[in-house]
Length: 142
Image (cartoon, rainbow, N blue to C red; front, side, top):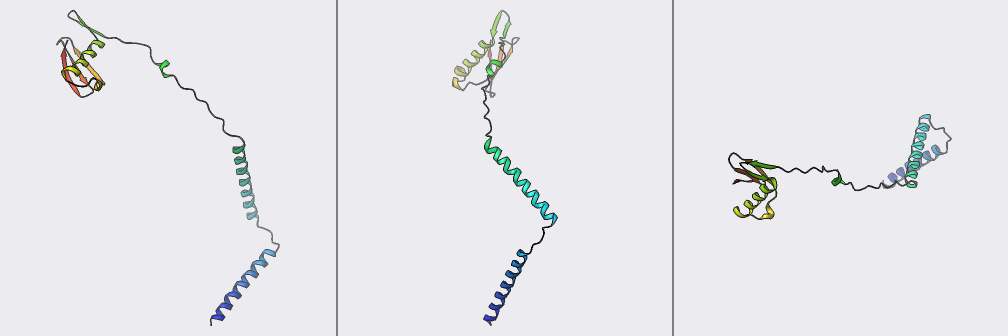
């Protein structure tokens, strides 16, 4: 039985090959739809090839950038505030220096850890309230 099944499959394969050869040798005209599809594919391939060729031939021009000078555009106004009361005068620089001294000597902190300070001057009480680094609160006499 094995020989018969083998012969049948060989016969079927030979018949398929013969049918394929016959279809290839026939001079048949392609359908209009197939021709249109082939034309679209050819046009797309040609356009893609041209764009790739143009990209290879014309390298992109390098843009040169200049460093922007932001320091020139800053406002050149300096503000200095002085608080005067009861015959005394304190500038903002003097009040900040007092706050730094309080930070270093009274609170025993490292001067390098002093980053920011908010000062609230109350001349009627003779006191300046501070908030150092957003956390430490207190006051000193002026």
